[in-house]
Image (cartoon, rainbow, N blue to C red; front, side):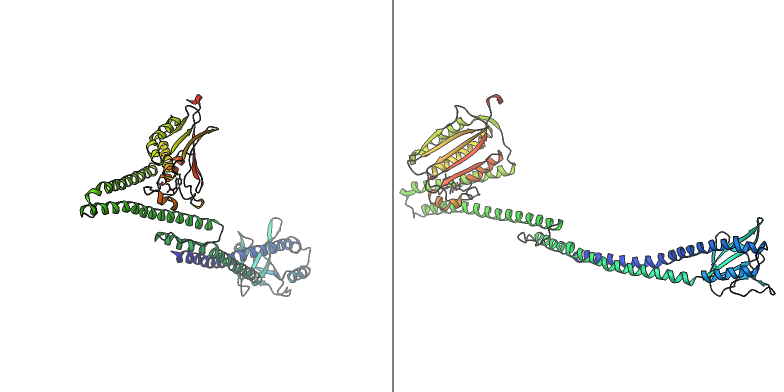
Length: 473
Ligand code: ADP
């Protein structure tokens, strides 16, 4: 395909050249000849009519002598580079500029018939055999008393006309040749601006068809070709990114499933073969239970993420009191807080604060944030949940005084399976999916979530929700 497009253009170029020359050769010579012939005939006919109406008619009305007229038409003949004759309707040549005046011997043109020229005012032939080659003849009648007395004929050789026509034809050929050479420049431009970039794009498309999405099409043109190449590069980059993400995702999921399964298997085998004595079974069964908890949590998180993606995040929006949701949530975490001697302080705006959102999903967001806050809090510290009203938005903040997040990790914590190095030791059960679920839910509400954190001091997660004014209820 690559070669044919270029060949097609070369072929079109050659066809253009050949047809151009054929057209010029076929149409230009007859057209030029005709035009020149008509032009010449026009001029000669005017002259012939003039002679017929002046000198020649004087001849038949016996006003002027043959000698006088002969002298005059001789002079005209030299000037016009043509032969002039005065012929009687019977065919007798009265005057002829090619011959001296001879009154003694009458010269006749055999078969002279003025009808041959009727219908046109000129004719190209040997004029009744009086010339060896073709001449252009015009004929004007000499009339007197409404009768035709004779004819004035002017004959001029046509090789003059032919040579002028040839000169014009040569000019046409030269112009065509120049045009042909100049249009080659268009071909060069086409090659440079269209064909070469197109070849690169085609090659790139082939690479993408072979799933080599990391290939980059190199073009520096800033026209439609450049735009097409950039769009393809962008598309391939996105697919490559998605592929990489998918691979990473599968690798992470497999890894996160394998480690608890390996440890469960290890403990159970050790219990069966007696490596772990029966009196220690309870302790290790609890560890096995914890590992199954982790697997359940991981499975649930994956299902949640999958639902969020596949349902295009269909939200079940309703108006509900977020203050009540926060209070209930804080109460449900009391048990978890006790072991680390943590307290949850609430600082809520208003007794009741109605927001419009998907309540179950927002509960999940708050659950994940508070769960993280508890996990990463230092013992004996306080976790603060605060709401602030600004314009028609409610900002909800979950703040802890825990290990904090390193500055370099702040942009990464929203990624799936991300767990910062510092948290790994403290949180063996974390999946690294909690915050990506949080972000997807908040974004689906067209709201934002941000984090402010200082390593070693603590973190604050703030997200917004739209509130419903009392008059809207
Ligand atoms: P996980 O289930 O591991 O907690 P998340 O997506 O909820 O997964 O969190 C990702 C990572 O972000 C955590 O492993 C931790 O490193 C960091 N992180 C999240 N919340 C906090 C917090 N409140 N304080 C410190 N680090 C946090």
